[in-house]
Length: 57
Image 1: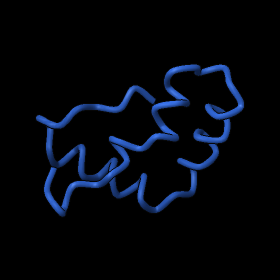
Image 2: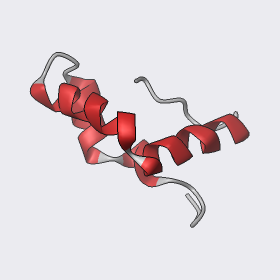
Image 3: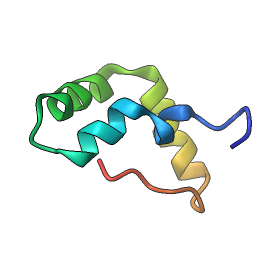
């Protein structure tokens, strides 16, 4: 991962939410992604880099 790669792909909060999608952490994560500018930038980065791993959420 280089300096321009967003860190959302390795986020511990995201990994916990994906491990248990019905948990409070998953609901918190879903809420967080609705307003987080970093997550939105990560989504744009994924579209620009199709070889990158796609998020499960």
